[in-house]
Length: 283
Image (cartoon, rainbow, N blue to C red; front, side, top):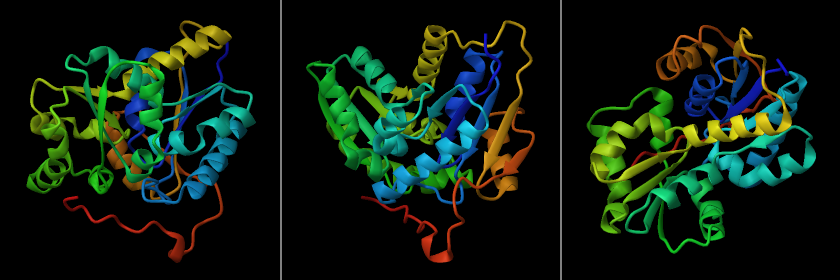
């Protein structure tokens, strides 16, 4: 039995969907969540930068004595997962393979769609993971730059997001996909919009639930579960404005986000290094 916390990180608030699933499935476990809101979103960034950010965040979480780390960011999983697992002794759980395994089981017409950031789609990691299943499926991938910024603003309804998401999703509708992988942990917060545009017959695969099951399995294999009845303590850290993170976090995760600490995982970025805003327009 191990009462140390589980570490979870993402480029912003999107990974809170994974934190919610972990807290629900493992109610006796403590969680430390880090949102790299000052340097995110990661999608448009160079892969070398994303790998460096992931290394720095991993060191920050290990300094908090976490027993397992969840890379709750598809872009970081695609860029840095192998390196993080090779460099550190704690179990590292990611979000790509759980979603892929679910999608190949759920599809009926063997046509799967994948939507994500430019970094995630460009990495090819989802295609590799789907090919590794040796299932006879076709895959249509679509980068959706701009959707993350809607979520980070808390804008999850309205005509603007419908127009932008509709343009991105049109190729997937045309490909007649019946299963769509939401390959970004921000996108489950847009399931209302995405489900409306794709139609009721399309399965939306949210990796959060499947990732939480992997966390359960890893803790079980390693004998790292907190004891039954343990009183969990959840901490939330953000590299950017903690008040903005708390406001969105309370909306997307719930009352557990009652306090957010500002904490940098690496050197502060200069104005020139801050991420450029992504224009939310049709592809």
